[in-house]
Image (cartoon, rainbow, N blue to C red; front, side, top):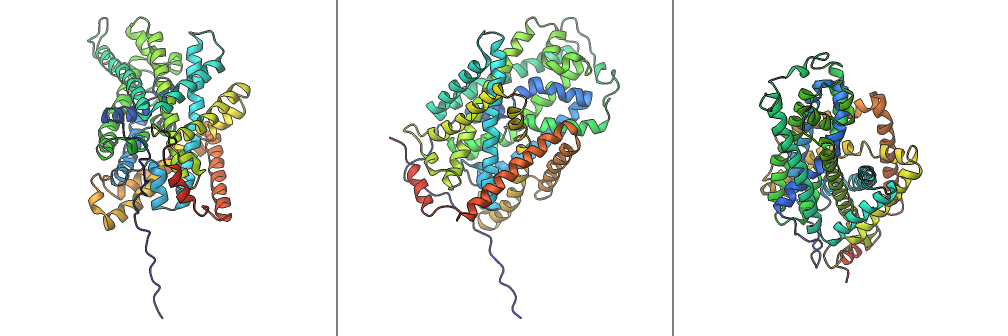
Length: 481
């Protein structure tokens, strides 16, 4: 009896070379650092943290630490793959290489869908802030913000990087100022203050709603950290992708966690966790207690900046993911084309059209259609993190066999920590199924996943990638004249 011949896993393949440069490599290290920070720090920190504090009390600190650790490890996994094999499709391309075409198709389309919905969400949020200052209709302001950010991305990748650099700089300055002033206040170094940490235990204890609430809050916190992975997509357009990603996925992520955890520690120390003002705007409440005049206006400016930053990044990342799908024949090949500034204008416009439709739905049917769209993309980030872990497990072993010299950045405690992190994200999905407020979001997101999987099955049934589509994609990659 003959033994079966073992099947050989597919080799790591080099990216196909286009006869002309596909994308501009004009993002610098300072852009990449701020893209990483800007992607992870949005309005969710300044406003959304209030719901986390209401759920877990002062123990929200633990929720942010645990969620931050999961995201940090995931970014390390992703960084290992990006440094070894930079790609504009990032984790979708790695899923395709390590797991199979279905995985790249599925996570790529889900991620694109996730970000075109975020484009609409952030445009609506920004319009709501501007409406208080400018007496124009909300839908006009939302459309105006989308036009400005679309134009920024169409101009050049460098203009996207510059906008993101300055937007993120404002957010970082605001957080650093809060850390300094808030630190002086709680340690008694601010005029009229004294050394006082009583709010951490004075209102029902450190974990007033029990330790179950700590893990329930992690579900919300995970989504607040979402966006840090954008820097790995931008790596394909940076001058030094390996160096930029290595810095962004380690040192920069540590700083993001410090910003989140440090500022939350100060908020729950300064403001009683059960105060009604915490849910509205925890940072404004803290500034008011400290006694800073005009805190509300200043924070509105910072929140608007955070919204514009996420809107800017969402237009960028959705276009690059759509273009990456097109290069593999998973989207129309005409979306691969770049203009004379080497910007994928067609992919940008395709994504923003969906964003504009979503903005209209936000005003025509805010409580039904738009709410469904937002919910149906809510758990995509968790699906993405799980796919990153599975991809890293397989790619690491292949790289060790075939190209160990590429492993200049490695995941810690491989493979054990990778499995622990994946188990952590699986636990988040279970928590979403158990928590009534999160269950709808999980179920509708699973529905989105099912739709994409069916779309892939239909595509395969019709013969998969059309013959000659690879050549068509390469031709489309040439700049549009």
